[in-house]
Image (cartoon, rainbow, N blue to C red):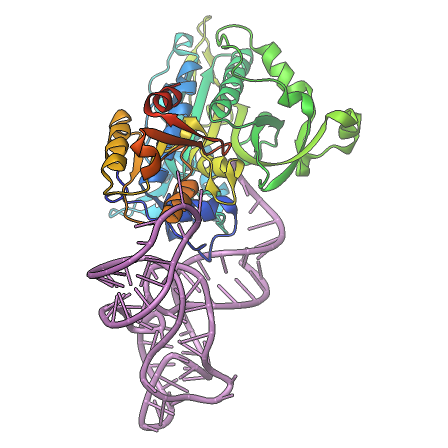
Length: 435
RNA sequence: CGGGGCGUAGCACAGCCUGGUAGUGCGCCUGCUUUGGGAGCAGGAGGUCGGAGGUUCGAAUCCUCUCGCCCCGACCA
């Protein structure tokens, strides 16, 4: 994308309504624009990040054996009347009436709908287990939305729902998702820590929150430093095998949010391993048994011919929230520092002197080498303005091309994450960028 | 849902108390100069002062109602 043609509205000043760093940077770097309280439009750069995050989530869900579908945003009220949650959910649920005066709602989650859909398919234990997910916009009419997309009313969520014949089977599925989540966040360059959680309104008795560590996170967390030593990507998990040892590793060390802080257990952690940090919840997994399958009338024939009510679980990842969380975890005073895996584009090519034949030629050559993955700053602005915008937008690489270097075919390559920069020949720069 | 604050140009704000020509900075347009970390000078464009009603000769300013947004708290992917 050439900046002279791009829809990338960056702001020099900080918008008054934005309080936290990710919200400010998302507005300043032209990722989103607010349309009403807690509701945002995604502009090109933001949408590209959102799509990348979504794709990583998708790949890891698929790898763990879940299958993608797409359920609607609008749901009929009667599904929720059947589960009993229509009244329980209260004002957080956005209720709508259609032209026939039928009660509808904008889905805040999909347990009822997936159970209803699955009921029409599953008749035998041979139809189990299944793990079905979708990535869809949700709406929860929060009393006080805030912090940009971190706590919006409309948000993009990946939600998976599993159906198993037995409790043991459901626990295996739970472990599959547990491991998939660790990998998902690790691929985005985030440190995610699973923590025991309350089950909340979704119900059930086995649940973990996944909290990513970020200096500017909204809540304080306490954990055993041992948890930071393990790289979830170090080895590929065997999802069909026994995942218990892996899950045990992640659950045997202390980790809790401030609300769940257990001072006695915390005191047991060796002082040198005590880590106090700030975190953001980006995922939550639940096992809740037959809480929905029973009232929704889902049952299958078991091996012995008797009807069995499947054991269910649900597994959420806040996809749009992750975009904000990624910025909270990766930024400096000048702007965003996108990790490679989720950057909207790979590099900024900064032409310091558009119109200079050598600069133009070198820039165009580099630009052509990364089709669709480079931003070319061909604006006639001053160098300072271009550097400032490039740092703000935070692409992993900056290729700075000025008249002095260009005359000798030199490219200055800057790594946004570390600030390292070096002057290289075109070939060496290409080698570095392609590595 | 309780408490507080703010709506004036694309953005950030002043003006309001004490009614009388709608302003400043950034951004934008044109020209000249400048050119490796958000340039300088000159000229220019851009406003239903959130909306409705009221008071007044006259309302951004005073009064009433209303809509929207933000912050603190309780609640949440």
